[in-house]
Image (cartoon, rainbow, N blue to C red; front, side):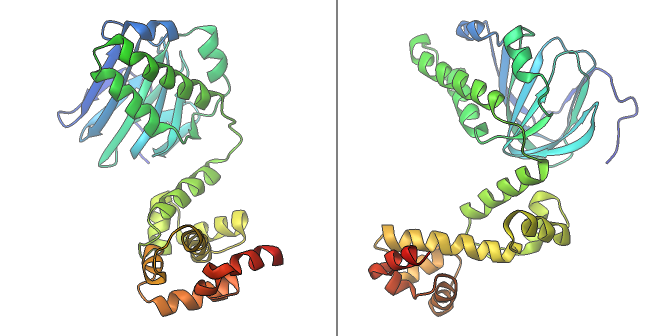
Length: 286
């Protein structure tokens, strides 16, 4: 990965394809009670490069989609969706867009004891499940003109902000990336997943991804995909009236015979028998 010629410098390069909406004290005075002078939601594409040498505020950024390259004192890393970036006050950083796009929500926090304590010793990048909630909450606050209608949304935003900054940071980057990959797979179990596609999503080689799945799950990536599909199939068999053919399609099997064969191999009984009460027997056997 390339480094800037002069690593720490004030840089503010935002191209015409970037779209940002700002919330400050003038627009939403209620944000003053939380000591958040400015925040925003950003949809970035094309040219984007921002660097600070000695920022007055702490900055936290929640990645909703796409990715950004972060330079800080610990090194350089690409940061993808569902991650939280924590940039302390008075510490230099540079962010540059090297992928097609990046969507995020961000907050500049006053350098007061509360925020200083929450941000102290946090890694620059951690996994975060609340990026979309914060993005949508701040978007509503931006467009809502009535302070009374903004109030519950601001309280919700404050909750998510505090909750994410208080969250444990013991997870490694590897485990965070695997967690996000599995979430992506679970959203699209019907797709024809390959190890190559999985590897591309987490920026790992296929052999390295295989080693990580063995380390964390004692399964290969494809074996874990099958496990996720069978777990979803079991849930649908018990909790819906969908046909077995429909359930097979939902979990990635276009041939119901292949699905039934795989289900019996994984669970021990055919899907029809599982639906008719075999699930209890399977649970007791375990």
